[in-house]
Image (cartoon, rainbow, N blue to C red; front, side, top):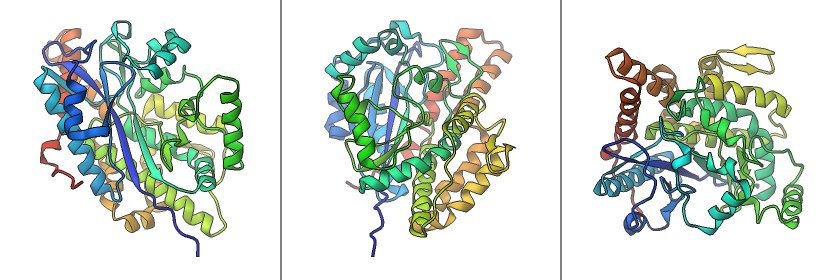
Length: 385
């Protein structure tokens, strides 16, 4: 009898560190901050490309409830340490008004190589993201699921959008982070491969040419992780609220198991050309859920709420299996009250209506993000190690 994959879950998030008084990003991280976080979190907290960023990662979780506890614990710890330095954290994929030209990179060899290699493109990377790892310990199966899961990535991006502003400007996009990220090589939708060996041969070609050291520098929207036996989803913005992040993790996990169930029946999700999926990727980046995505079977744009209900129906069995029905149906609440991108735009407009000038309204957006990043976090019980 074939053993089902473990489908464990891990969530990685990148936060911004802001001055509590100015609401601007810091340029240099406090020298002791990472060590102070590490006293409680050990290897679960790491520096990021910019000193104004800090990354956290959950332990391997066997339930979405455990994942929620973990994310709450990580946010709580980093926030408390930041407060001791007069700082706050925000979970959003761009800062509303900070300028990329003032940022300093972290003193780490990997980041120095990226900065030297990519020059001005790397200097503009004033963006943060969220990555979801789902345990699939069979290499061949990871490739098969990656090939089929690309279809759903724009649908997940829609639920996460948190980057409408760039250097003080409303960009008109719900995820401007994706637009910035698109300038980096080896990003976007993954290639399709017939086998894990074929994937590895392509990576080895780049390694052999001296272009990259390993597949950690293949930054597709979804990829086989080189560090863990997981399939890693990377397209999403970082969610400002914890429960939104957990919802997306639950949907991704359930979608992979649904694809696995099809496989066990000698079936598979239909493959679509990258040019078609990329059109939905752009619509998710530009509009979020407001203008719908293309249903390729019907050949027309379908309102996102209708697509969501279809998604929920497809993975209902898997949500029941994992005990996360409440987590996936939380997506309806996201549609009802908007994503972080909607809140940011609304906060800015309300502040202007109330008489605030442009800069004051942007600071109001940061205040909202600080509050919403910690929404409900203090009430989340500490996860048991």
